[in-house]
Length: 123
Image (cartoon, rainbow, N blue to C red; front, side):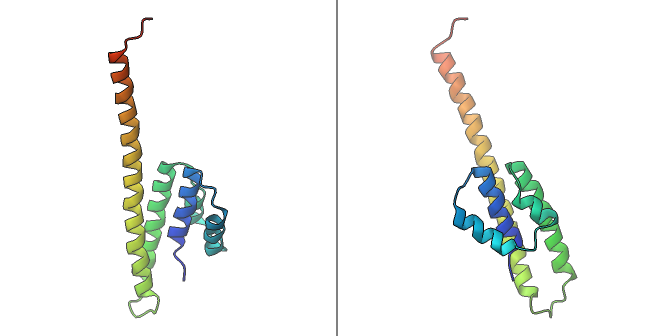
């Protein structure tokens, strides 16, 4: 059993952040071997945080449908529910990352404005 959504998310975030950790990338790719399709493939290939959020949401919808369609007596049911919790948590973490990035951008804009107020530029 594998947590395809988390491994695909790791790959997508490595793309976004420019992470060069070859062993981490290879591990994630190995976990996904033969399972790269639909939202999982799109998530693993994401290049922006907005793409990561969009494809993670689609993968979460698919996982929710899979859990709903699985009988509670199935031996994999509890693991699948655990995956669902982990992916929902990952979704919140990505949202926090996006919010923090947007906060940094806003702070830089404010710093720029203060700099020009303090040292006006003659044009």
